Image 1 (cartoon, rainbow, N blue to C red):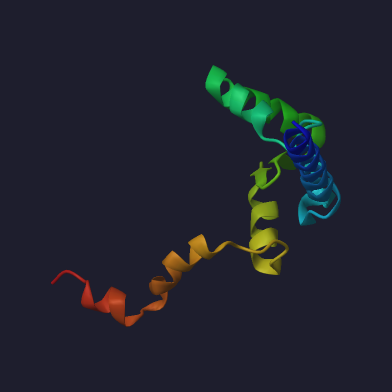
Image 2: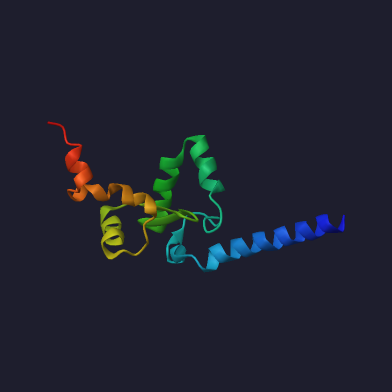
Length: 117
């Protein structure tokens, strides 16, 4: 019984640590939150998406808060091209390794050998 209580306490402390770390240490803290739970949870936007009203809700939030919104801990919404280009060109946020899949568009060997004739 004591081991179970100790395990639950450690789990609760670790959960609080993760939430506080995501709130204070995230590079996305400079972006306005679309919802008060955006820094640590995406549940609110998942509920909106499930109900099928995402586009209308996000549009109204952009009208209220501006062209750049934080929807979740790792999710942004851009309402204008200028902000998107600035973020990409100035490298304000790091890209994940997923984007490395597109590096062959610079004329690499793999792309040239797969070309149709």
